[in-house]
Structures are given as structure tokens and as C-alpha cells.
Length: 139
Image 1 (cartoon, rainbow, N blue to C red):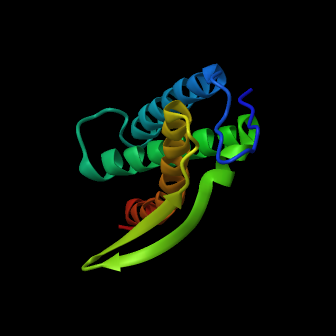
Image 2 (cartoon, rainbow, N blue to C red):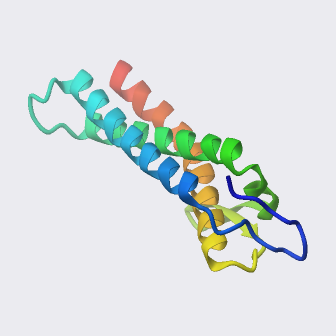
């Protein structure tokens, strides 16, 4: 398990094997969810846009869910590198800006960025899933 010494932004130790395994599990989980959900919605009768988008939304949600909560269990100190979260409206889009502090280790910084991405993906996948699910069920 990655360890943090907590001194002057020092990052986790160089053992990232569990996080690499967690990423493989999260990607496999997402692919499995996408395939199963698309099959359940269409029976693979043909390419349909709404079920495809909904399946990809499910996959993004489950990737974020698996990787984010897995990181919280395996490397809980990754969240300590998040300085602030801001929701910013830029023109017609809403962006989540997350500011992180450097760990001093480029490999740790990569995992911090992956953790933030998974966290934002998990949160941002909820709204499209609800909208697309409503369209699928009632549209």
C-alpha cells in the first residue's frame, strides 16, 4: 500500500502496484457494465444511439465509482493533495476545476490526477445517466 510521510508535500512511496491493479479492475468493470447494459437494452439487434450513450454513461459512472472508492480504501491520503474544488461557468458549459498540490514525485502526481479524474467522472456521470435513463424509460 502506498505510504505518505507527510513532510513538505512528499508523495507516496514508489509502490503503486495496487493502484495499477485497481485501474485494471476499474476499466474491466466499466467494459463489462457497458457490454451488459447495452445487451440488456438492445439484445444486440443493431446499433442504437440512446442505449449506446446510456451504456457508455454507465461505464463512466462505474469506472469512477470503482477507481475513486478503491483509491479511498487503498490510498486514502490521495485526497489530501486536493486543495480546492470550484464549479465554474464558462460560456455555455459548466466545468469542475480541481486544484491539487504537487507531491514532489512525478509518479504520485500521475496517480493524484487519475484519482481526481475518477472522482469528477463519478460525480459528473450522475446527471447524464438520470437524463438518459428518463429518456430511455419514458421517451
